[in-house]
Amino acid sequence: MTNEFEPFEIREPAVQTIPFVYNSPHSGRCYPSAFLDETRLDDLSIRRSEDHYVDELFSAAPSFGAPMLVANFPRAYVDVNREPYELDPRMFSDPLPPYANSNSARVAGGLGTIPRIVAENMEIYAGRMPLASAMERIETCYKPYHACLRKLIARTHARFGLGVLIDCHSMPGNIRVAGSGVKPDFIVGDRYGTSASAELSRAALQFLEELGFAAVRNKPYAGGFITEHYGRPARDLHALQIEVNRSIYIDESTLEKQPDFDVLAGSLAIFMGQMADFVADYFGDQALAAE
Image (cartoon, rainbow, N blue to C red):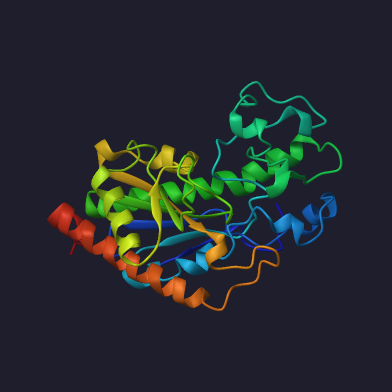
């Protein structure tokens, strides 16, 4: 990993007062110079896989008393919302280790732990890379990121007796719900009820709709590796993935923020406050800060 920047950062409140952890794994926009030298894409095209400025949209999290983990490295460099070794053998000049998962649908689609493409199926690399390059990214970015996320969730669970992970993402503006043609502003993913309680998912949908947004659940995005891996409702660990439609806050051709970007961020601050209040009411004393 490069020493050009820190791989990630934790934006901490002075004191954590709510059982929430916010996570923005795909908003990183610090591109290692060596990586830019390797890619065949221009400086704008390589950014097409970013969840653009999602960390800024949810930046109010610490003001509500919740930590927020934010990746600085880009998703095109290494994707922490995958298993640690979802690798495509076609990308490397060396054979993969036996523990690599090269058969997943995400690898087939070019979006493994080390992505082969960015959005719109644009190939990142002109040729094959050494396997050691992928392993370095996994050791210096992926594993420390998940170690930090696990620590934040474990700390939250120990303090409050429960934990709620909000995994923050964005989606292309052309997404439609199959069979209905609905263009959602938000998708709330709970892995079809396996990563969070149904009450929590319904509350998130209700709050977003009351704020004037079109919100749907699980389709077409039900949640990725992070939601699946950390959501354990039976152990009072809930994980929701929130997808924001990019077309409502950026120009998708230039990646520039729209004029009402701050208005959306303000709406999401209201949403975060409502979610905190809901969890405090629904889970009762369990969700109150320990003295």
